[in-house]
Image 1 (cartoon, rainbow, N blue to C red):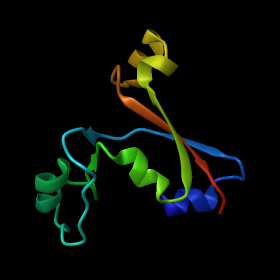
Image 2: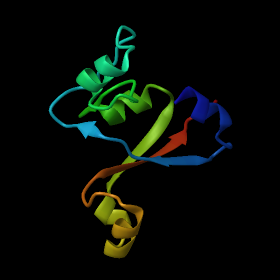
Image 3: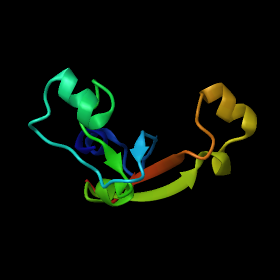
Image 4: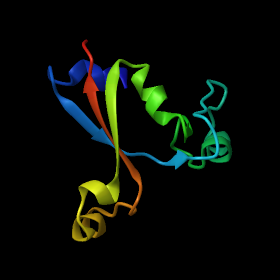
Length: 99
């Protein structure tokens, strides 16, 4: 998130989505380093954290103002299908609050 903030234009916005575990808070650990551990802790071997229900607060700590939407609030049924977005998934728009 720091690198995105660094390269984002002044007043630029970043739109993102990620898998979110609604039953837990965001979890990451420097001790989770193997693909096997990542699969066990984060659900995928190429992930480095598990975002949880506190994802918006987690992102705001990097100095972003975050707006949150549901995919079906922003996209048409056809766009959801073509973009392979899950209907109802959370989509975030991040705007830097200063570099």
